[in-house]
Image (cartoon, rainbow, N blue to C red):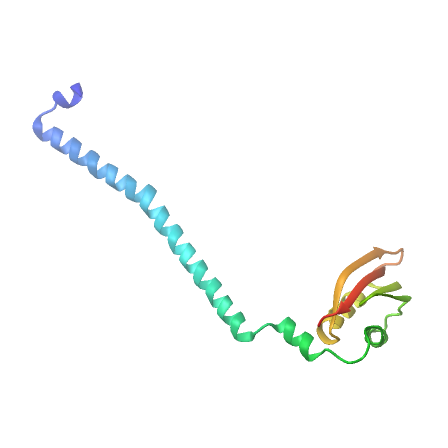
Length: 152
């Protein structure tokens, strides 16, 4: 405080006033602005989430709709066999396990199997519970063990 005492009253007012303004500016710039910017980002983020929720609410539950509309009367094994034949996939084995069915494919192209599984879930009312693929020696060839059940 000896420094302030050695200054003239006018210099003290200028130093104290400038220091106060500098402190106010620093608090505004380093505290208030980052908090306000973060709040704006979060407000925009919440608005986007709410719009997605509104859109999803308007569309309904597409998984339930697909399952409900495509719950055929044909048994699960027949639907799997037909869709496999339609996709050109040779099924090696079908093992029933209660309401589930274990499907084994000895050898098929990876891309064909992925497309077939997607088609099963989208069009045949089937849900894949577990999928296990093993790479074979041929390029792009895999074997498949999959457990499925009715999507309903």
